[in-house]
Length: 100
Image (cartoon, rainbow, N blue to C red):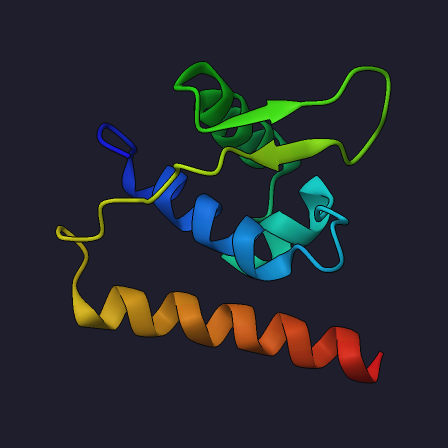
């Protein structure tokens, strides 16, 4: 999808990786996996994705965010270290959940 910021593209990949069995991650889980300390930052990123049409929310339910099927972040501007760092953060979070 054209026009996503780097953080929004990272959020899309994080949401995609953390979604298990159709259950989307919480804002806190997204923030932890992305290394963000503030839920306000996560909220801003998520609502920016909604405004750009990359995801949608179900009505009246928590954890109802859903990525649209055609969302593919443009990763051309990302450097290899940034991608490696993101992959490592997501892997650590997934291992923490599996053991914790």
